[in-house]
Image (cartoon, rainbow, N blue to C red; front, side, top):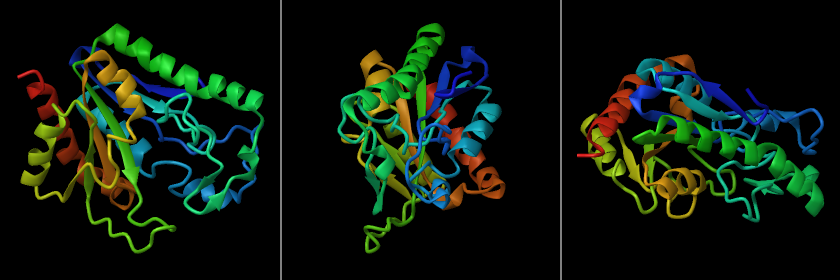
Length: 242
């Protein structure tokens, strides 16, 4: 256990590892972001619904999971270590004055949270040698800064160069009647740091799932989607090396 990550135990022989970068809205007591605490329950602070969906999915498939332990406003675990906005100073129209920190403070925060999180992922991958990584995220139906943007998708599939699992998952989800966004609402060509490092960097197939947050924001929603997502993940794991 670590302040940087939470581990969900599972059968590592299943060869599937779930990773959720933005599962937590935790801000350590010694870090002051300078924002209204109400914002910590919104999409700018975490991927709403992901922690519950991740726990349910790990239990259903009996697979291990690694969940980020701090809010994306503290440090964005799904960014490269040298990315300018790894410690954001604004998010969806909200300023984060507490993140106007010195270079030394920036380096220390990355070393405290980002580095051990990615080190743990690397350790678990080395130990279990997974055939499939599942990257679980959620997205808001509407950004405050882009209210005109329509986001009708229920699930988005993200990938960069390795589309092995994506090409299995997209038709499988469509076959279940799911409204699927291929590289929508975000593009894995741009926002794919964790999977670029641990998936593509190791030649491991991965399934990047972006679920609409209002669909998994409560236990009822998670229960509704669990059968569909678990079946798609298992299908990818069974077929990805075909």
